Image 1 (cartoon, rainbow, N blue to C red):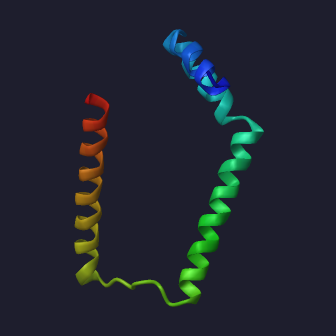
Image 2: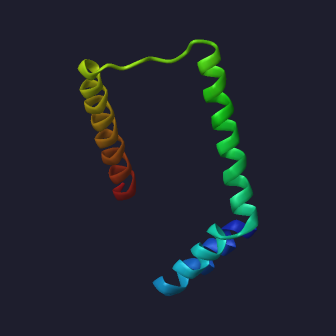
Length: 88
């Protein structure tokens, strides 16, 4: 059994308040913050490269509502999928 699995099993036995405290400790840790920062830097680099290579789309008032609707539909589908995975 891996260390991560052992930690997960131990955390599952904690009270909800204690689980929250462990989560908060991890989120506030320097390791977590550095991983988040590194990920953000990679995503920004991808975005800049996309802009420089012309891989972007501009929106007007006319097609902005269409974009919002597409994002909303995609979000609802993703939420339904997550709920289904948790149940089954």
